[in-house]
Amino acid sequence: MRSQRIEAKESPITFKGYTKDSYLLDVKTPRFGTGEAKCTLGESVRGTDLYIIDDVTNHSIEYTVCGCKNHMSPDDHFADIKRVIAAAAGKARKITVIMPFLYEGRQHRRTSRESMDCAVMLQELVNMGVDNILTFDAHDPRVNNAIPISGFESIMPTYQFIKIFLEMLMTLNLMLIILWLSALTKVLCRVVYYANVLGINVGMFYKRRDFTTIVDGRNPIVAHEYLGDSVEGKDVLIIDDMISSGDSMLDVAKQLKKRKANRVFVASTFGLFTNGLERFDEAYEQGLIYRIMTTNSIYQSPELLQREWYINVDITKFTATFIDRLNHDASISDLLNPIEKINKKVAE
Image (cartoon, rainbow, N blue to C red; front, side, top):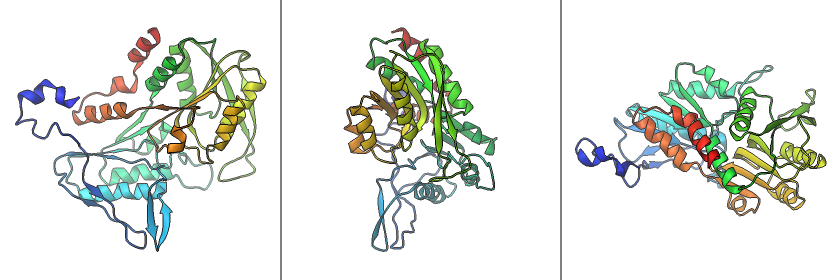
C-alpha cells in the first residue's frame, strides 16, 4: 500500500523510513525464574507512532515459573502491554493500543459489590500515556464512558462477514437472522443492521437465567425463549460477539432444528471455544450446525483451522488500514461504517 503512494517516491528525504519491509519493533519480554518479566526495546521509538497489538486470549504462549510450564493468561498479556509502554518511557509521539478482544470486556458494569475491571483497565492505559485504544466488537462499547475524552473505537467487522457469507452462498433460501445471546443494545442494533442491508427478517432468542445461583462465575441459563416468525424450511444465521463454551449457541441450534429450520450458520467475531471443539464436531455430525464463521483477530488453534465446519474470516488487511489511516491522522469514518462497500457487495 505505502510503496505505491506517489508522494513517497517523489520526496525520498521527507519520507525517509516511510516504506519498509517490516514495521515490527524489536521487542523482548524475557522472564526471570520466578515468572516475573521485563520489556526491552531493541531500537529507538523517539518521535514515532507506536502501535501495540496484543491478543490477550492467546493461551498458546508458554513461560516457565520455578521450572513449571505456565500458559499466558489475559492478565499476563495485559501486564506485557504495560511493560512495553513503560519501556518506551514517554519517547513515542503517539501510542495506540490495539486489543482485538477487549481485556476484561465482560466485566464492564457493576451489579453488586464487585469490581469494574474493564473501566479500571482503560483508565490505567490512558494514565500511562496511551492516546488511542482500538478493539473489535466490544462486549459493551458504553464502557468507553470510563475514558470520555480519550480515543476509543469498537470496530465491527460487518463487511468482512457479509462478504464471506455472500461468497459462500450464491443462492439463499428465505433467510432469517436470529439474535440469541444478549439483550445488549449493541447486539440488537447489529442484527437489525444486518437485516436491513441484506433485506431479510429478524427473530430473537433470549436467555432466562437463574439469578439466585452462580456457576463458573455466571448465572446458569434456565431456558432459551424464541420470539419471531416460523423458521421452518429456512436457512438461519445466528449472530453474536463471541463463542465461549458454546453451550448457548448449541442449545439454540437444537431449538431451531426442533422448529424444522434448514441450515444453521453462526457468525461470531471471537471464537474462544474454551471447552474444546469436540462438542462442535458432534453438533456438525448431527446436523445441528452447518458452518461457523469467526475472525482471525484472536488466536486460532491449528485444530480449529482444520475443521470442515469452520470458516476463517480474515481481517488482517482491515486492521492494517486502520493503522495506516491513524498514522496519517486521516479519517476512519468510512471504515467504522462501510455501508457503501456492503451495498456494493450485496448488489453484486
